[in-house]
Length: 142
Image (cartoon, rainbow, N blue to C red):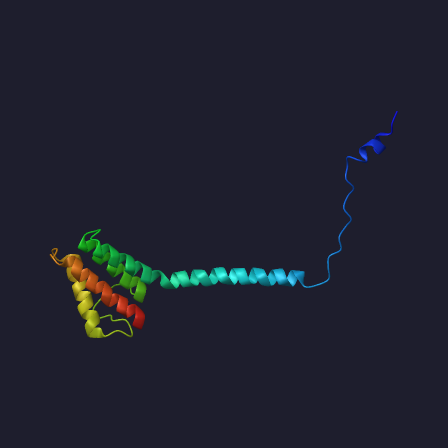
């Protein structure tokens, strides 16, 4: 009878020899690549957060241009945008953010209040678009 160890020798591949780890900076290189990837993700997240008020304002302006909601609701969204953008607890004419013209701010807040709480005006969407344009100009200067 044949020896089974000899018959299986052709079927079973021999184990590969152990490879020596090359001397070099492989670990440092991978650590640097990982750090760069993490830095890139953090940078994109920061840029996304930084552009969030501009995207929200653009969404409000687009909704006003397409008349997607009532003027009072859109004015409420614009009020919430101003609170978020300027880090205010409440939008008030007397509480003008730094870097803005107080008279223009007071006029903007008064117009926004009329759109939110007064009876609907026939030109409310046009006024909302104008308020969004003014707010967009503030985003560039503040």
